[in-house]
Image 1 (spheres, rainbow, N blue to C red):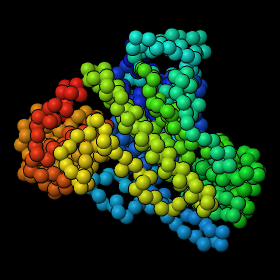
Image 2: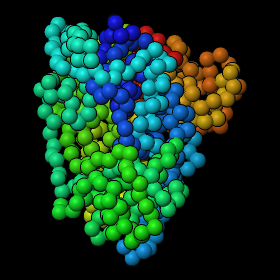
Image 3: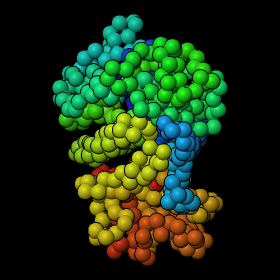
Image 4: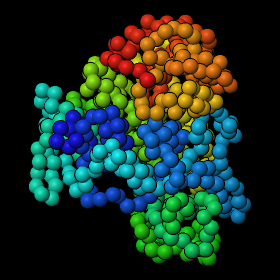
Length: 498
């Protein structure tokens, strides 16, 4: 795979790993290089949103991720007056929804996400090349020529595309000459550390609010450690020593019975809030933190990067297989507005956290990323009006209670693997379409005996729905316009549907 790579990915965090899995799963030769000598230590991001769990389901890693995490961990908040409130559970409005398989955030350390993705990449025949750094690159005639440096010396490689997933200090972004607009707010800082704790239960995420700021201890599932977080205002001591972390905890919690052990990993986080001026320069793309840096409030950054990769991966593969190169222009057009919205959301939640000296205890739909959509994209077409609740560009809803000739399943089982899928609620005879029926299913049919699928898609007995490889709706025709589906696929250079 490495000798004929079409794509070079720089940076093996969650975004780079996700993109490598997407491409390798579609048969695209790819190289994934990482300057660090091995996997990064520390929990860093720890919240996996429901939409990201759906993405992990689509590439076959969700069970591994769930096995090392905990859904809906309670957040126990202690106010300065000692009053205790508990939140953070499953949003009631999402409970028992057949169209939403994961209704709340999963807590798991970021390194567990990377571990699951590395295992999946190995199953697909790929591997991370640790200790390999990008030194420079040039572009000419549709080829990107990169110089890589490793312990054995330098190597020059030629690829069709280079993708920078190398974080906020991205070498790829800097060498591509792409501006990174935004600000660094030194007054908004936080100590983050992974450490063992004596004298505290692991049943909840513990938070203490104090006039000088917050301090939290969150048990990290599948480990023996907690993630420690403490806001550091101007004039407060930012030292990462065990003694300072203990002092902050005791002063803000009022407890001396909780003892911290020496950190396994610690960092002083500063509020960098930035967005790349553009996501592409010729054959060079940016994804994840290389394109956007958010505050950790709301748990959005890692998730947004993973979904960048999910959007870009199928498009790169499609162009290699004959789709028009203009398809790649839709990556920035779709994903940059999402990042801008997430920046605004996470910044607002950070301001709330600092103002209230506490993390909001209620999760809401805005942070779960189920509402992320590409309405208005050139890839979104429908004949519905503005009053319709589901439009082209929206996330494709799941549906349970379906049966085929092979047995019972849910819609996402059929979407797994990431190809274009046509749902035919009528009899439009679109080649390759899955026909939706209410009676027992025959070959190429889905029996929607409980009506969950029709309800989720607002379907009539003529509706056609085309679902993209990344689980978003490409086209809806309530008039049963089979030609519109065929024209869409032909214009996109797509030769087969699931």
